[in-house]
Length: 263
Image (cartoon, rainbow, N blue to C red; front, side, top):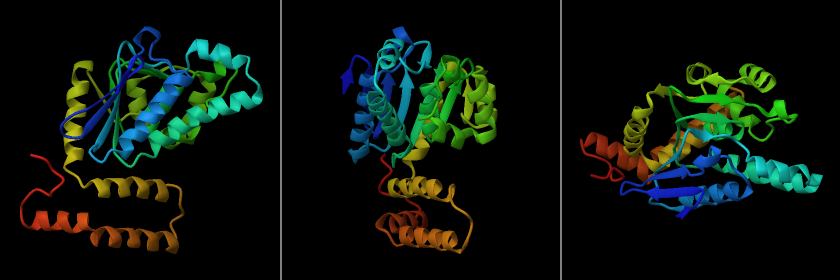
């Protein structure tokens, strides 16, 4: 799939790369791009041949957040129209965060507002040394409401309060310290590192990784009590008895690659 603002490619190993392609406006998004990205993520989720999804961008910026022309239109919207519009962005973030397949963000430049939200929604985030981040909504008299659950989950409520309130820009080193990104690399190392990580992911059971993502989402919001302990025991019992679980264990014992590893 390829449109002016979005490029999506899948290689022979099942690695999909979605590239934001509006470099002339720093990959800012409007309702059209939001809808296109949401639908493409849903399509890749349904595609059984896709194993890993990478989110990248062209140009100097990863994403500067909302397109100014879109924001001008929103200023004249009614509450109902603004609510419908906001739900579109909320659906994008929810879709990206809840994909059953592992996701990797490659942040090569500035990520502002909703761009930070995209990074926070991915399972793994890599940033170049010159990447920068800013949650600038309060400067405009707005709040980063839709992305707040994902940013708070990534960096914690304490840091979220600071950066939501100050709207200060922070660099890749600080983003790494906060937990927003996992690794900071030279720009020319970014693609190679994503390639290496994606190959690691391709070695793992697809069903197991999907269940791991669901497991983390569940336990992160739960109290450690008898119900949670019982739930985790049931989850491991189910995967052990599954076809994938049996294949993985057999392959390990037989010193061969499991069927989901190509080549």
